[in-house]
Length: 190
Image 1: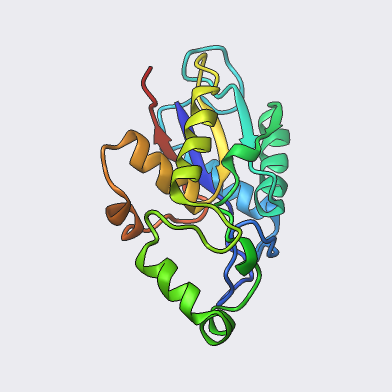
Image 2 (image 1 turned 45 degrees about the vertical axis):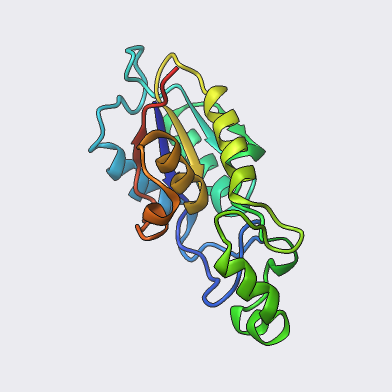
């Protein structure tokens, strides 16, 4: 089982970001407390034990907004922390860290084309959904099957997990919210 959790809120209103590293709004310890409360609602054992429902490790995206929270969570739960580039957010390439209003004014044609073809196209120098799916699938395939694993990750990765393991499609998941700090369980098959 993968328990995917989106990082806490960040200070990036109006900014295009995927791999760009905006700061967290809350202290990592506060976001960790929110996660621990949310884990209580799942059929997993938090804080040790050796059942098949005991969380076995924590995997984090390399982004600071994930890594800082994951480190706090790993310490609190006494678990090893692993960093995995495969659960990083979709790369927005040349658009990273730019305000959306700037993109509309200075790169409007490429932005318009990408918005029309978002299911198959990539931002300039960025990543397509196919690339995101491939690396999230690879990370899932490599996940320990001896118990639940927590991923501290991003909205794009969680939406990808929904597409891969909940028999849904991209238009549907793009119209659904991915809340910050809320654990979501996925049971990959195979």
